[in-house]
Image (cartoon, rainbow, N blue to C red; front, side, top):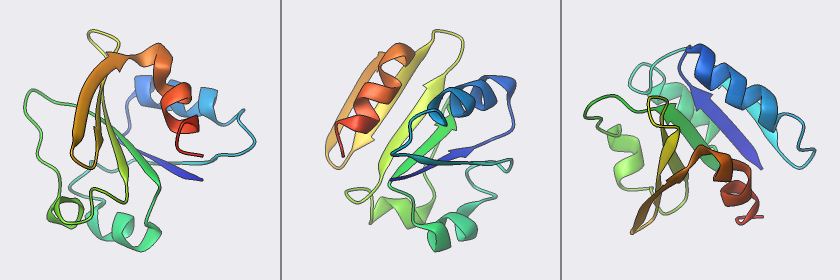
Length: 106
């Protein structure tokens, strides 16, 4: 399963490092913002895309039509929470649940 982190914060780097221990995941960290990495993400076609949420964030157009294919996770470092977008389902949870959420897709 391909997991891509988008962003260059220490928080995201730490989360990516912790997930790299899971043998069933291929974890990659792109240092661009979500919008800057749009074309590269389209080519990589990840199963899971994790990015740092800002006050209000908009998903690139390439994920609007294909959101059912990719698990989108917006990380909120200030509160250690995640906004999970999976097709039509949207929910928030603790960052401690990150690996469990991803593994539920395997």
